[in-house]
Image 1 (cartoon, rainbow, N blue to C red):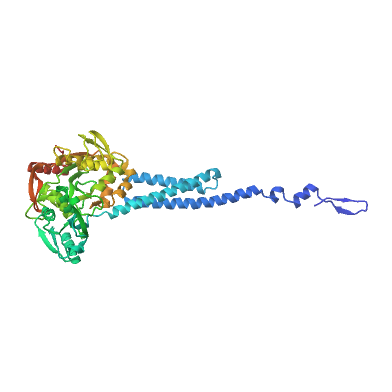
Image 2: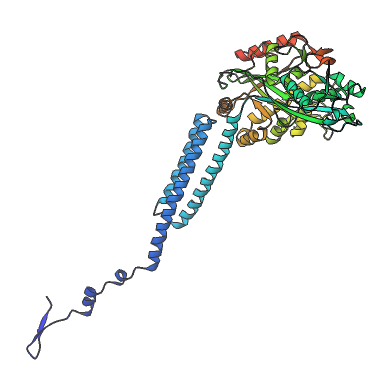
Length: 526
């Protein structure tokens, strides 16, 4: 109750509260009346940053999940490596998300965390695109499904014939290859112009008839044109092409696919190297014929090289034998089947490469180290000189080294050794360095258009996991078949005597023994 007091007029009045008390009852404190504007701003900014942190954390989480899902689906890493990667990604994601969303996190810390979270999100997206590209490449790997070939109508360089129409009712000499691709090309020629076809008995007869003017023109494939130019250096300069026909036909392949766990079971691979650049589907001779016998349990690889001029019976043919290199004209499956017959072993897989493959692969992995036992200028690349000793080779040098035969007294036998040395150097570079991790996608990208294989995604993934899990030191053995020099007629070239190498049966039997030892996991005593 308020105090009262008397006044002279005997009236009682209420006593007003003191100013301090009145103010206390009627006016709020300064802090109650006015909130600090800076505090309001800080609270609002904190709320906004919290919202931004939630958004960034969501982005980081989603990109991390996408990356991990894609990475797991590729199945390239051993389980323990995969677990480590998953834990690292999870810790980064959870740690950054906690700091992003925690209201007590200071702004001076939160902003850098935002930036790092966005950087990791971008890295996840980049890595995911990298993995998708790799997955697409692996999924599109397939065996040889078709062959392409160019056929030419060729005349003398000083001939009056300028185009195909000028040859109407004229005589064109040709050699019957006895394959569908030739017949289709010949049918196209006949449908384009009326000509008289004269079939000769050998490839060599074609150039002879043209130079002797006993035929107005000749009709032959790019492969046989290369054969003629190999034996007659003047042919290219003394002739010209007046018409070209390009043909594509289905290639003969085995219907069956090996059911092999390549990370635990031994297997064989035919490495077939064609003597051409560019499109791997182009029909060409097999310049390299090498059987790799692999035992993943003993970490042993045996490379058996067969000279390109080995005189063998082409699989499924009768009559004349042929050079092994000519098997490639009929497709890589013919090479595989012929070598299977020769060495009495199943050829499980094949990898077909060409000159472009070698150049691209060696350059991508940063070059290789190869020993050269003499100094020489390669006959296929006169712009380089290969010294004696250990040589660091780029792609062009490695290819020239692998093709060299004219600088050596033993010719093709030494070339086989060079090819083995180049392949071994590539395997060593990939298996004894981080190149398989850092250059994996680049390797696949560079060779995508110049490689054919019936190796599937699962097989490649299995071999990569094996290498990463155990990092084994592979023992690589080399062996080459041998023979004697001769001249014989061949199945694919008709009645034309060519250089061939007659097989040495002892070396064939020795190779068969070494192959069996590797497959059985036994020591290889070369």
